[in-house]
Amino acid sequence: MRRKRIIVCMGFMLMFVIIGTTACSNHLLQIEDSYQSYYDEKQQEESQEINGMADDLAVLDVEDQDSAGYESDDYADLLINDSTNEVLESYHCFEQVYPASVTKIMTALLVLEYGDFDEEITLSHDIVLDEDGAVVSTLSKGDTVSVDDLFHTLLIKSANDCAVILAEYIAGSEEDFVEMMNQKAVELGATHTHFVNPHGLHDEDHYTTAYDLYLIFKEVVQYDTFVDTVSSKDYTMTYVTSSGTEVSEYMQSTNYYLLNEYPVPEGVTMYGGKTGTTSLAKSCLILMTENEDGERFFSVVMGAETKDDLYDSMTQLLEKIVNQ
Image (tube, rainbow, N blue to C red; front, side, top):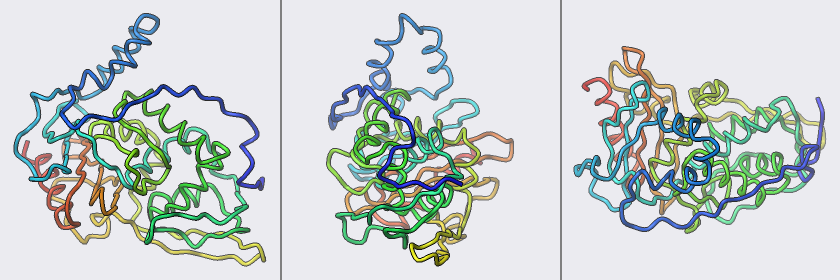
């Protein structure tokens, strides 16, 4: 296996043109707006392809949103039957929210698109994060670790340092990787999303919507490697220190459904997803599940006040899968 320094790009230069996005306003946005800038540029030359994109998505507008829901301006939820593209519940799904570590689904998507999971990376520097209490791995400067182990630790432990390491591996710098994230969001129609980092630690300019997260999640679950990873309840990362010592770091999933700390409703098969928590984003979770008829569902809860509130709200969404 090849070894490389994290500071060096992947043997090729990635060039990107970033389409500017503006901050979401606080009022609800009609779903047509989420695609409009992208459609206007592409429609003449790729009209059939763009129309096909819309045909593959669940589409709704502000009038379709439920008025009932968790009573908080920061709360949003969404439940979509992906097999029929039917929206079963939506609440504040076009309003700006902070994604916290749910951000990592976009980081994972770009690693899947551009990374070599067999490649090994030697860390050229320690990863320094500004937020106190941010979840990190035990990796440090001089350690050598595979992209595969970093990917699992990114999603299972939700290690923020692994997000930075992978960003530098893919793009050469965290800043260039963020440009890739924003470009990919535009390509997917998630134009009310703006990223400033690959991990989701808080920044006022780092935001999304519940519907935009659905668009990104729908894309990344096409990769079996992602689904297999987020379905795992635990994992052991193995790496080698600069002195040649092999180290193993055991971790458990941050998804409490997988750990049986909260019961999955009967008749629902859990395929996992991604959690996110910061003091301002509060508790967040996006999931892929399946009912007994083999239909696939995506569910999103953002901005729940506590972990109990998060799983109570998500369980109510999952029960609608069985009772629809």
